[in-house]
Image 1 (cartoon, rainbow, N blue to C red):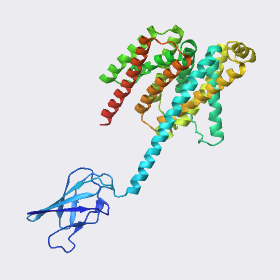
Image 2 (image 1 turned 90 degrees about the vertical axis):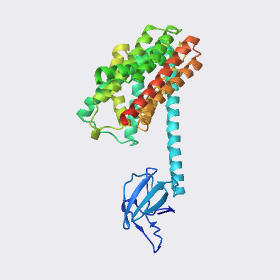
Image 3 (image 1 turned 60 degrees about the vertical axis):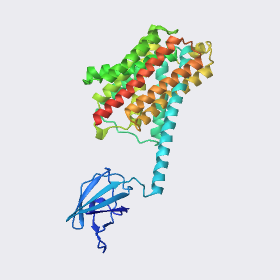
Image 4 (image 1 turned 90 degrees about the horizontal axis):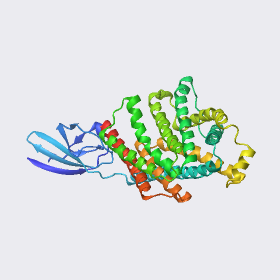
Length: 408
């Protein structure tokens, strides 16, 4: 009985493995195949000159360490993967490509956060002197609709084909979307930006509640535990909020309900995958429908408020007409683009990763608005806000754990 060890760099696919003696009397075997072995230890039986193998696959760049053992008339080959790349140039290109994708994704997240901060600051400034949230919401959807039409008109993105079934599936999403944004603007007009976004941290609570009621999903114990600090933190922040207003509080809560209803509806009323729209076109169609719905609603609720006389009246409260119109326009453009970027990110990462990013975005918006508007914040209020945001982060982690268990 003897054992001999060879270091081989195989050259051909593993599916047609053959060994030969090459004229050596000691039975040493040589190989011309490229191996891609996944497991650390794979035994291969030898019959004559052809190996019958049982193996899974890894990257084809793995070099293989062979041990050839002969016991009487029976020979066996044991292969061990050593994970040494055979093509340094290919690995360098792959690493560069991965780095470029990571930088692109990081840039998209930064842009998402920056646009959101600008939207909330300018939107709050406009609503302070022009307290007509329905008109402002219609104007923002109008800005988004213009951008959508320009995108399609200039062939920057392919135009979708909307069938009746698609429209029927998208319409409830658009209704929930327009209601969510309208109610958010109502809240922003009544209370501090930081308080509105603290209340909106309650979104996971409504997600769990609606999923139980309409989808029959049972949350895991970890998800239930993560909801506790969210609810407790929002309650503490509400009791200690200097700008507390019941209209602002209820409208922010209602926006949570409508936004999460949209997410639940998107699961129940999903269009056939073969006909499904991509994220950009889906959001674009929703934006157009929202503008068509919101324009008459704004006239019905507020009347025609975007007129010179009302703008002049608003200007007397701190912003001149030019500044008011410019900030309303910037907030409208940021309103559409930050949501568009959000949909684009969602197309590149998992829903759980997007949820974590959304949690961090809320932190950035709250901190930025407190600094910009010099919002008075008590220690208890800060603790309540932080507790709610920690709960949102724990919820995201619990969702990731749940999705990992389901995948397994």
